Image 1 (tube, rainbow, N blue to C red):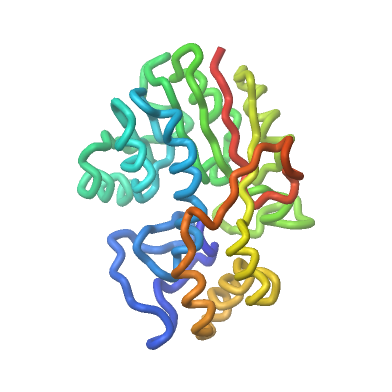
Image 2: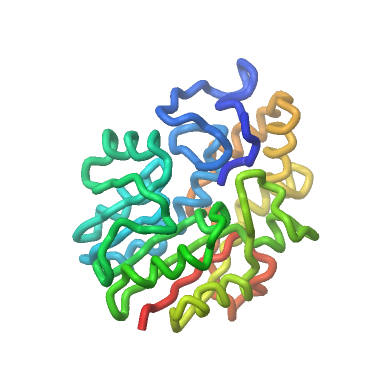
Length: 269
């Protein structure tokens, strides 16, 4: 997930953002590291990998829908083995060339190219909202997990990402979920012990929200949609965001419907 503009530019007009070459095209469907204009979205995704990587220590991990591959490579720091699958041939070629620790394959996520009960953890971050047959995909995740294996999934919270709508604002999304729908999706596939957390802006990002009319997210989207120049304060704030600027909070400790993203962990019995 990016600023969800199909032809979003990789930088604003000259003098507002540094130009950075990207191996993969910035389409709005996936986020890419190393672009200042994309830094908010990249850090918002990266923080979930960082916070949940400890559950992958010494284990065999599949990332289903790896995109650019930075997350699979991050997990490779601690996992015994990381296999990655993506539908996009360009992404697969990029991962193969850039992240040699990751075993990457091109495949449809509705038919994962792994044997039954072959991995300990399946990671699926910011992908489920792009899929047409979400139930079939989760069933495939359950199939390839070993008993007691974990499915770890994140997705934008429909309530805050597409407020007041049943259909997604993002043209790349097929169906967005709230916490209840996400839980039901996992349980319907036979997974158990589903726990849900929410990703929120921390104190520094809330200060940035206040500086940019109440939402640094809306401020970025407005410029992407209109191709307007970015104010220097917005440039500086977006480039300065780190993973420490986000809070990942258990559903019981904060109102989950107010979260930006939902993060679920479920167990294959």
